[in-house]
Length: 177
Image (cartoon, rainbow, N blue to C red):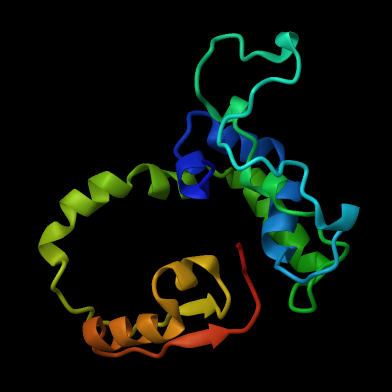
């Protein structure tokens, strides 16, 4: 089954994002349930599987590896919105596209690829307190927030583990269902 975190760990995932910077960022920033999209809100890929069988024998991955070339990216699984949301200007989007074209996605995806290592290395900090001021910003309908108990749960965790916190919720910004 497809999951963005697993996809980000596949060999070649950064290259797939790098080859599709404009479309990937547009869909990831602009899509949320209920927004007007092209093609009756149907994404290019609606199959729930991570790896899709080739449509023709000639499309087989030549090396037979399970990598990002045989697993359509996250953005292809989101419908394409008709326009930018009110909070994002074309200039802002162009800036992000330019920055990602310059730096690539590999650095950001390494975070997902190192989750198990980080978990083991930071285990001794699990009951620690964050002392510097902390600000948490999230969309109120963000799928990650919903998967972790909702914004109220996140606020309680911040109160428990952050001495100096100021949680902020920005409504309807980044949403993935």
